[in-house]
Figure 1 (cartoon, helix red, strand yellow):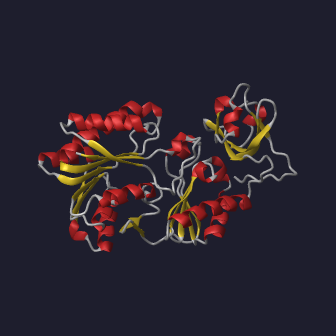
Figure 2 (tube, one colour; figure 1 turned 90 degrees about the horizontal axis):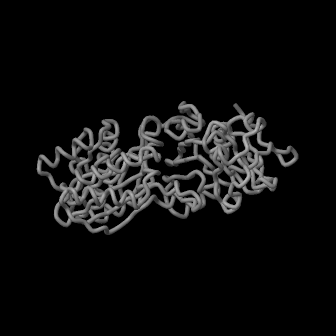
Figure 3 (spheres, one colour; figure 1 turned 60 degrees about the horizontal axis):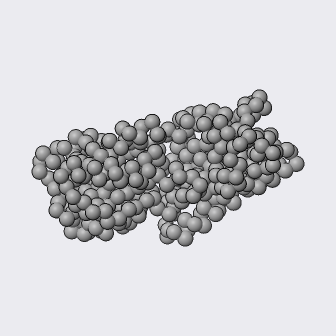
Length: 404
């Protein structure tokens, strides 16, 4: 399906806020309109997912250009507060150029999150860059419908030669979108892509790995952990491709044990260690993380630095209580493995659990393990994952550093 962009000479379809909806919030930068805030008359219901429309308040005053998806609880996403904006390739290229300018200031190599959705002015769109390859997650209907001009704009602005579409993930299903990934331009890399970061080398599987292939968001937390790991024995649980563990070894740790349930992810960690020439300092242990934590305790193992970076246990509000219990359990199982005066790093990427809730769960777990802790540092996502101040959900990543 293709949605033709509208020009200023062709009036957009109009959608309107319900009476008493907070239009002021939209004017001040709130990016989303929920289904119960929009008048859903027959004309609005007839708009195809991803259609571009003009949003008005209840007094028929224009608020800006939005994209509409009746299949989503977020029925409208603000594209541009200029009512005359034309959502075409040129518009996308301007947003991409602004995002690229920031990343060029932050990093000296083209490995980063290039677009972080609403915070970079491209609602629902994630783009991670791996050198000459970009991976797009079009998590909003408009970007799925306009994927061709979006891809063309991306190539125009960055000069990349390969663009991949990753359609996996919960977010697309909430938008009523399919899970079919594809090659949008160029040729798929013939193997994992080596990514230099924090002195380590990570192997990113751009087609078969988790998310887009690598988690760039933890970059500053990898670095802070590495700064505490000189001469240390490190345990990296939920290690994926060895994010924390390889950074630690690259910066002076004497050894790292990486634990994960995924054999392919651990194989990529091993390949990264080999590329760094530190294979003899890396130990791989595959299995359920909770079981492995208990097993290491039974083996009376201890480490100077222990990191637990689990998947989102509380991705949405209905799973919050169960998720907080899971985070507490991780802390309770991990704390006994930390040597006296060692460091315990606990992370959460759950949108539904805020920092206060997550910290409380961690502290309870540490206390129930019979350990005492001081909080020495709090981390969040890197600067290539900017936050939109009006959208709390964009500040999802939390990393707590405890001295035990």
